[in-house]
Length: 108
Length: 189
Image (cartoon, rainbow over all chains, first blue to last red; front, side, top):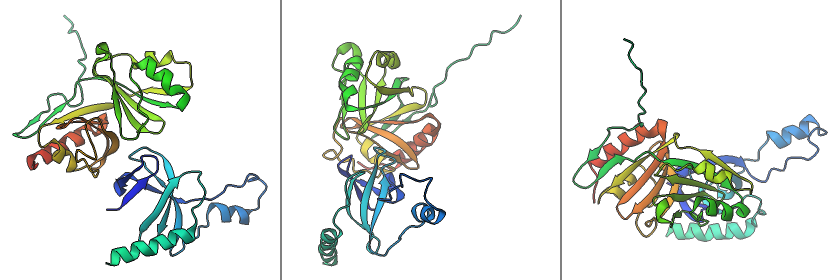
């Protein structure tokens, strides 16, 4: 079982208490009635789904109930960091360096 | 002569009991409960009205200090959410209605019910279905958390080293009690 750090409970909690809530940092346009269908489709339906680092929303649904953001590596399924909703995106370069260290640690 | 019809109020777990050498599982007495949602500016007035200081640290609970309010507890559920339980049946909604600061209070006395798990094997029984680390240094006396037990959501409070209170929804209580009873059959100390 994965342990996920909840930034509101300030503790690592078991995966069973959490639910995934889609990609993070998707900005809803302020002029949503004015944009055309292609732009709406892009914002509403299309997601990146990259291999590697992803920024995701998670919810501590069976805990404090709060939504927060997480950076996860889809290859290793390792959570690199979690942070409160509304906080800026962490720097991916610094995070992936941390991931390399973690991977080496796991290999030993 | 017409029979007089009287409805007797039955608690969801009336008459259930599990007792073994190392653990006892009993339904808790009827209590009044509210779910409170409030912003920081309403915490102090609500604490005064309820006679118990609403805890602001994650995974903590607070007891009422006054002896006439003995047993009333406030449980931290989320950064702006608390569960307040009063075993003496006090009207908690009336107390909160006197607070002028914006807040939300919902009476859940009948939605929730509670089960007390006590004895040396209590921690082991809960751990059969709860994924959290319940060892005393991580989940000490007074700690509380919303979490899961098997497939049901519960609010867990450690009232004493070997006493846990499991708050669950009334409709889940049969499942939760049966789960705990099953776990008690092969609990380890």
